[in-house]
Figure 1 (cartoon, rainbow, N blue to C red):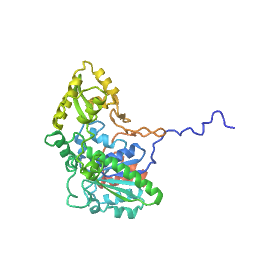
Figure 2: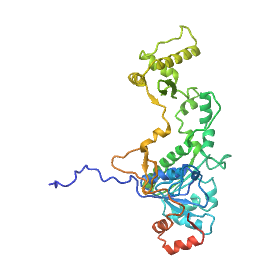
Figure 3: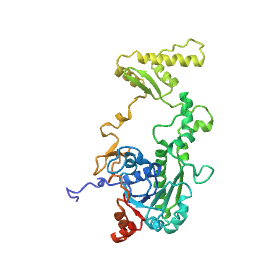
Figure 4: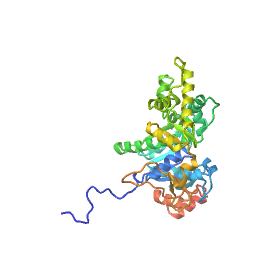
Length: 391
């Protein structure tokens, strides 16, 4: 018989991080690599950020709290910090020792840099056959553009996004207001790493993953089908902004499809004379939609009509409004700062941010004791030798 106090057999276990405490050595900079490491950290991995003497570019964006700027904190919260001067004698040997204990190594130096440091995949996998190494670059490991600097705006331009947006809006090209190329690359990187870890569980072997930012953005283009088929319909799903009582309103369709939905429900009548050419029909129908919206004195009534007609609409909200009251963010333990959280909720697991973004070398002693078994005297000696860095 089952005890009255025993949990039912189908009771889910206590919520814990969904990933094992895989060891991740994060040698990357800026956003594309660090954000992938941040995601793995939230999911349960022990992510150790290796930071050199140079200031990371993300330190120039945002308010400084806990000794770190806002963007840096967002990309690196939850990690432990290890300060290493790769130019110091003995530093390469230390990285090799850490890589022997790592499940994953993330880097986004320019192609060839890790090899020149003696830290390329061939060298490290000889020491640790189970190591999975992710190398992120702008344009791939070889070819004429391999050595170009590749921050997100460069990829936005090279991927066709800016030219397409300018053509659609009939204006000069301008960059995007977010580092889309970096975050898309980081998401692909995380998927690739999880797949490689699954593959290692089945085969026992790690592998090297090359990921270019340009490829990540280009293959994430939902209109690639039209570009590949050369159908000229690359913009069919783009939303349209209309002026409405109370401010601008988006309908998630271009004008011709908005017309089709509204006219189908009898909300607007066709003002175009019989036999009108297509440009005339488009102009008059677009004006009819605008006039119909302007006829409402009450915004709520307009939105109710759109809902009844099955039209997908949206308020054009400010970024401040989106993140107001802590929405889409989580508190950082031991800090007044909040950072963006994961956008998915697990039913029987709990991702979390465990600590603030680390200061340079903040966890030197802890990491080297945990990963390599080094004592405080040895760590102090490496610090005195200039191998280890502190803030």
